[in-house]
Length: 223
Image (tube, rainbow, N blue to C red; front, side, top):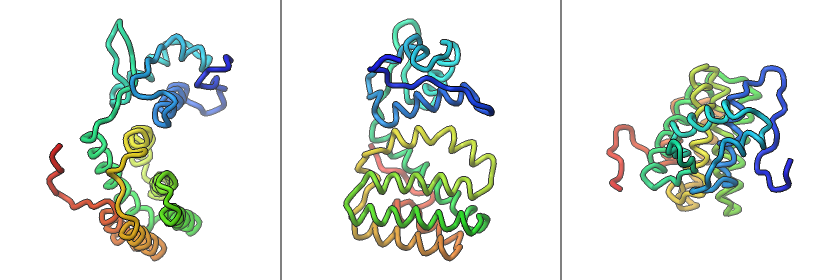
């Protein structure tokens, strides 16, 4: 492995699906900024770093293109895209409604242990707000979404979040549009925490919509 390689070689283990792992590895590097907007992705180089053939790498890049994370111009280049505010708003709306739906199912179905983990994620968000740490709040919200998806015990939800989590992370990380003033945000996170702890399914979904300022059926803001 070269010292400047971005991706570590894949070590296949039982049950691993190679195409999913390649998609996740490249997608994570795009989401966290290791592959920034405009970065050229070369299948030969990616395959070398990951220790795989070029075919599954090409398939992963095509998959990433479908979600708008890369742009492919056949015969010329493949490069990382840059999300604009409209795409970020659309992603935020999708993520918030998805989180609300998942929590609605999860808080009434999950085990007590899973419920405690959901409450702990909300507590982490509140700690991040108190510390003025936007990245910690974002990480807590991402954890909450992952836990809610598992707690919902719905195979379709699990598949969707597996496919879209990288997209949500890339499009929303660091975006000021998902933030609100600390006071109202703290109040809404506290409300969400209390409704999760009380296993109030409808209330938890409503609290998520309050948190992200969503009204079902509302016309989206103009660009």
